[in-house]
Image (cartoon, rainbow, N blue to C red):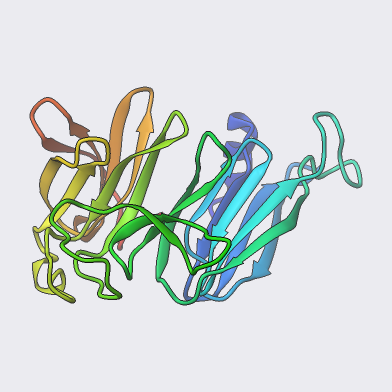
Length: 242
């Protein structure tokens, strides 16, 4: 950790949450009353997608979708320190779906990227999941990771953009197209808005602009929706995602 990291959190007035599927942990980083770093970590097998929307924190793990709710109101704190306390409220057992990114829709339902079945899905009260969208080039709902669908950008409570490693419709067909087969898809239209990427992940809409990680090249950049071009802004050493 750099010496200036706690000061950066203070200047931005934020805390950070992230996951590591390799260690199987959810990490929450904040500031303690003395201005130092406060770290909380919890074990979740293959912790992957993570989102916070309002009072809800949603987490995708190896075979479950977890929903937590912040039980503190504005102005409340635990031990005069923590201003949020996320308590587990719902757990959906989905089976192993290789669930990647996750979001909370306007109606409160959790939506997640079901990578194994190449679709966006919501938890089901009866089945492992309910599919709500598939890329137009995927011909069947099967337990075959065909395109490695992974990233999800939400906009106004709806899934808007997703990323995939390739436009493949055969099992594991994405693996030999990782160098430049990556795409960003508009969920509403089904159209590819950017292509030629290397294993893209984690699209996000910020102030109306679409950002994405071009993970295979270690780049954070912006998609020009008018031209379909990817414009890198920052180089990040390593395989960036999340």
